[in-house]
Amino acid sequence: MSSLWIGTYPVAGAGTPVGQGEGIWRADLVDGVLQDARQVVQTPSPSFLALHPSGTVLYAANEQTVGTISAFDVVGDGLVHRATVPSGGDDPCHLLLDTDGRALLVANYSSGSLAVLPLDEAGGFAGEVRVLGHAGAGPHPQRQEGPHAHFVAHAPGSWVLVVDLGTDEIRRYGRGPQGLHADGIAATFPPGTGPRHLTFDEDGHVAYVVGELDVTVRVLAWDAASGTGTLVQTVPAVERTTDGALPSHVVLDGRRLLVGTRTADVVAEFATGDDGLLEHVADHALPGRWPRHFEVVDGWTVVADQVSGDVAVLAADGSVRGSWPLPSPACVVPAHP
Image (cartoon, rainbow, N blue to C red; front, top):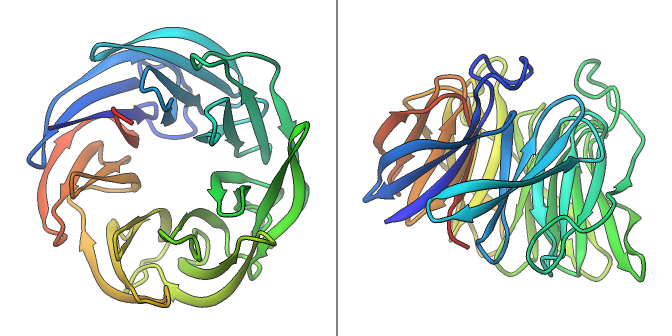
């Protein structure tokens, strides 16, 4: 059995007024069956969650116009609110613990900034937020009018990367005596790509990047010394592109690359070769709609279907194990580090 934390949007959906009872849920996964799902705390629009390496503190990105980050102490199977602080920008959408556990990294989508929240040894907020901004735009008039930081990642070479949907770039940050600092661009994509999320292979030689706006997956050869990715392959994110398809999240599970795509409502499976290149295997249809985020837990793919309001579970062969109602799920995180 594994336990999960699940973050949610307001029931009326992303972008609607927050504070309508949404919050964080806890559920158990037993042989691919979701059991005992229960809301353990209310907090506004916790669209992304991150667990401290100790497993004793859970952080939530409260995705709202004036962004905040909440910290909760994990007490048994429940949560106790510890503190809420500004996120350093607007609409925080992704969180990542820094490698030493002494900072929480925040992607603020609407303001396009990376924020660094210092943490103490126990995982508490321990100082003023540092905000690292960016400038630029892309050709899409509604989605790329400015920078939109969507995802933060650790990269081989001790770099921190920010995937910027608005500027068609992966921004690179280095480390110095004063902490993180902007250090140029790790990769630039064709205009209108709208890069959203990425993952690295186990050896750290290849990065896989989801293009939300052009419905692609791009394979980058990664050079750790220079912190640079070079494009080596572009493939469609789904075999049959649906009008309005929007790829969301990507996970590498062994030699399988899994990509969720909204509107098409599938998790696409790709096989990764020894050279890191991709070959499409199948598009696994979901029982619900709008797979915003998913995680592979004990071999099961657990999918947050935001719009249909359910959590679906797929077996390793892509077949549906089941689907369980849960209001506007947005993020799935294992409850133990």
